[in-house]
Every structure is written in structure tokens, then in C-alpha cells.
Image (cartoon, rainbow, N blue to C red; front, side):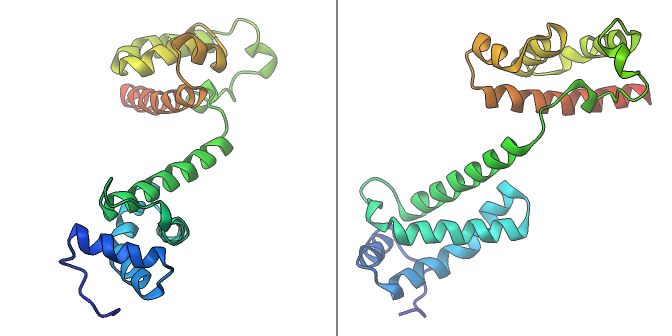
Length: 194
């Protein structure tokens, strides 16, 4: 059975294959595994950008397919859609967990504060004003959603949570928009110095 060519399997072929997987048929699962592994590896690699992690995601996805096979409903979706949805969700969960470990982004991430003595940072410092000028100068290069977050955090000095509440978006969205904006601003400012 494992030498069956799954290349031309139809939606109903996969549906009947999954019916056997639901009965814990290891040969049927071997077909699913063999067919979807390389496709999942490409798919997960695009999300996580690391070969080792992509392989782990493939293993985790297919383990989930085996363990949760009873949840598959061929009436609702094709097997490939179901499997790739599981993979995508696992990738997002993993990336979310990683982001949780990231440091918060501060203005120092774009403009190092080394040359400014720490005790001066709290008080007026021309560097802080220059930084704000640069942010204002390039603010219009950002998409509106990112621009609102940058304005609130850097120019109005609002805490991340307050910005999230004010814009009615999750805290994680504030952080990711900020991260993207910081990257764009850094590139614009570097380019401007050239």
C-alpha cells in the first residue's frame, strides 16, 4: 500500500484514506505522511525561515493529523486544506511564543543612546528632540496603521497598553506594528544619511 502513487489522488481518495487513519490504520497514515511531508516542509519553511524548525513543524503537524484525525470532516474541507491550516496555526503559535520572548522595542533600537549620558535622558536633551524630528520627517512614509502607533508611542509617549485600548487593537498588534515601523524608519533614516 505504501508504494501507491498519491500524486493523482482525488479529494474523495484522500477522504477514504483519512477514514482509515481514523481507525488508526498506520499504512493509510504512511500515505498521508509521505505525500504531505515535502509539501509541508516548503510551506512551513516559508513561515519560519529555518530548516530545522520547519522540520519540527512538519513533525508536529503530522502528529496532530494522526492524533486529531477524528476531527477531519471531508464534507467541510479537503484534506490538504485541513492539514495546511493545522501547519499554519502551529507556525503562528510558535512565532507568537518567540515574539513574547523578544524585548520591547524602544527608541534606542533605532537611535543608540550611548552618546547621551543616562542622567540627561530624563531631562531635556537635544538628541531626543532630533530623534523626534527624524521620526516626524519620515512618518508619512509609513502605512497609516503603523503611523498611528508610532505617533502615540514615540511622539505622545503613551504606554503600549494605552495605545492598544485607544486604537482598539490587541497589545501584540501594537508591538508588531511598532516593530515593522521601526524597521522602515531605520532604513529611511540610514538612507537619508547617505
